[in-house]
Length: 118
Image (cartoon, rainbow, N blue to C red; front, side, top):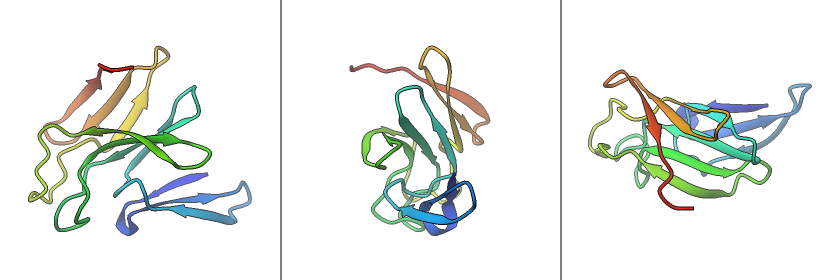
């Protein structure tokens, strides 16, 4: 089980019996987690900024679900590291065709992300 622990800037991993296995800190301040059919973990981070997570940028991080290695990052285009109210994607989803979506509470929209490079 993967648990987004935004307040502690980590994802916690547990087995089926609830035994803690590991913590991953490479996904910023995670809120939403999803997986695709290619073994990737997709993590939404709408709260990385200069106050709550200095040195990080808000966006969606994509990595290997088995190792946690982050391989791709979608920068939130309007993100401002000086703003602390969270304007990026709170959750992420992938449809059957592999399209990626992010749910953004401000300005209340579902954003579709289109891959421009292979």
